[in-house]
Image 1 (cartoon, rainbow, N blue to C red):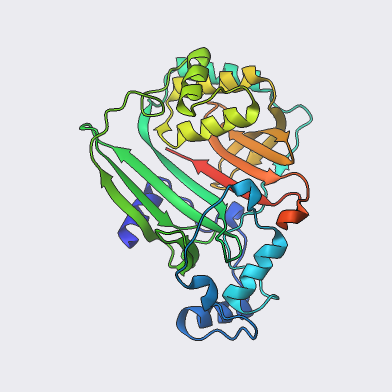
Image 2: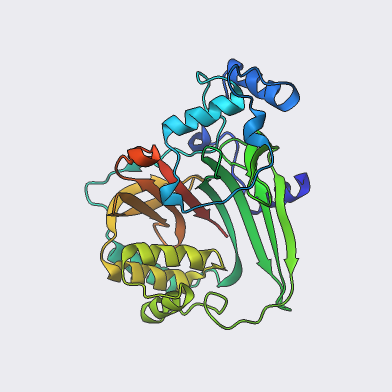
Length: 335
């Protein structure tokens, strides 16, 4: 498993001491509890940590109805560490901080930049993806947890493709993380633990999202609608379709320019300012808020390439135990 993790890190290295990953180590007491969890009996007085880690039937539900609040995260941390006073040993990310500009860059201007960059050349379209994600899930009988994963999909000329998924959190290199088994049951695993490594037989489907995306805005809108089996009429649908596209393709310069133009034509993403994404890359943030959910798309300031997509609650939802600002999902794509 270490070999696969090394390959991933060499493909897109993130220095362990980078300031944007500086959440800091666990304090001594938390380290002691974690050591007891990994190598000895838990000292939790009211509920053993093993309860969260035992095999169980698990059903993952829609993220918006399952997001874990800070309160829930502390509860889960108590199960893992045996103390509610210790910082959570979980992967739940904090919301990204946007540096508000006096005049943030409008999307149509960024689309112009992306088209100029594509005219000068740039990377080509490639089938496959490299994505790091933090996503919430909940079982029928356990608290919700956030699982960090890194997924690499590569295709070969004969139509086959391989998928490698490891449990890892680039904010805490080398530290144990929560990983989901094949049935979704969460358990603590070592950094780089292989969750899936499969090779799939040839697939020659010519339907979106398997077929190459077009590199014009109008054609791309129709493509995304076909890929998600429904019209792309609202911003949430457009962003969901964008994530679906990026989970299948690494866009080239022309496709990124077309996507940026399509997002600009939608007209409902508000420029918010500059931001550094969870992999340390500078970007511009564009925000949409509907039905108590805030989506923030992070784009490269020169090429318009999508760097990440963060979804958070914009208002308290006490029926789910969540507060405004709680992150329900984050994805970061790279080449």
